[in-house]
Length: 67
Image 1 (cartoon, rainbow, N blue to C red):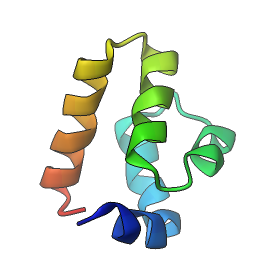
Image 2 (spheres, rainbow, N blue to C red):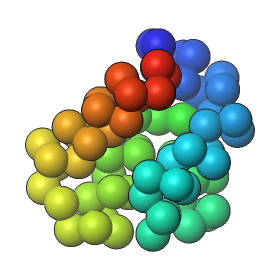
Image 3 (tube, one colour):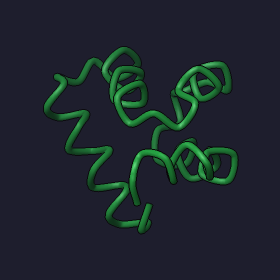
Image 4 (cartoon, rainbow, N blue to C red):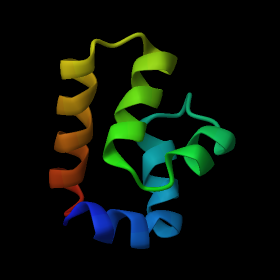
């Protein structure tokens, strides 16, 4: 799935994101707007992960869920 598809299906994906990263708020998800980079940034902020760790988590989540 490319970045445009992720953005286009973001409303449907929010539930899956909240299951994986429960500390993200609805406001966080609204601000992410389906952007991988913004999601990585929010995960870094909420969980204190380094950027490369957060990027791996997001990429793993996308692969596992075919996003």
